[in-house]
Image (cartoon, rainbow, N blue to C red; front, side, top):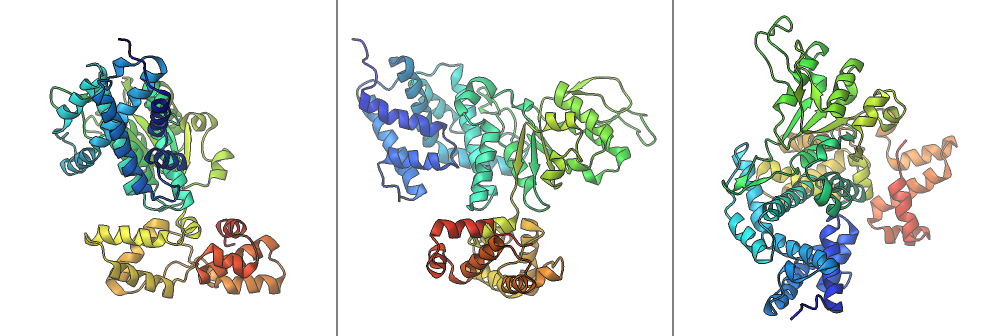
Length: 494
């Protein structure tokens, strides 16, 4: 008897699951699809909708199993494409917690790949769903990659302000492209061709963002050893280019041969030689390197080859390059930082890491989240009492409008200072920055040199700091909530 395929009702449901599997997990679209699958109202929490979504998918698949239809080979055409992704989605989430534990175990084990105790069970489940022997290890590897990317992007980059949500979504696309289906078919083993430039002020967390990308690359699974072919810890390395004098920079990048220069008593492997298979390298402070080094790096990016200093031997680099700089975007786009040819080859993707002041401006509770994360990391435990203590001193000594010129790195030092001395003065750039927002607005009116949009934005921000919600500010000013939110988000100190 010929299998009739999916019914229209089944197809509609499983198509939604298919779309959810391909949606960016940091996007509003994924949240809407989870809610739809779970059959919840839009007001449901993200965690609740995700958990119920997974349960509902499992329930629907059990119905297929009861009818002997839980096999991808029982379907054809579009139905087969849909049900293949649905089964992968279901099995992935069945082992979600196992993958998380594997990630934690690998962090403790450092460079040595750890055994995967649940691998045989997971791959058996794929086999029973009709996946062939060649595709099963690949899909298992892809599942691990997906979970690592979500784990490192969500857990290491704290914050839910709009600009941080945008950053997390962008990082996910950087790992998997905008279309995971496209990635899985064509690009999973070719991402070394896509270099990345991270922009942001000093201390914003560019290194953390780079590590999230670098630890989320595809790593094949070794069925014989029941472990992945390498540790994701070893797959990421970084080099701060500004810490090396120009005379040693090329050697550190490309290595050197014995006798290449005075002091070269042995052959030396540079960072590109040391990069592991399936690895990524962060070249930090890349905006400071001289022209002739840019030319040599261009060769690495373009031809994937380089020569150690003092030799004509050709070495090959198979990893991915991630670069970072705190130089302003305007300078980079105007061509004052990089050669044009180097810029165009380096910047397959440009990701901007937002400053802390913008994050707090968009969502004041982001400061509390960061304090919670920082204090937990320092003390090993969560303490509401310590969070409130540090917050009180910040409010009293720095004020609500402090701009955090050192960003997240400064916040960490602030917490240390408060825990040690119950004191932190901050860094005041100039006299104008020591003025309160109210004083600045009044001074602008007195001097008649403040633009109306800046005045309104500043006034709305002042009220928001006092009243705490957009709704209360809207009621006080007679403006609608969306206008208030726009003014506050766009507010900037001069």
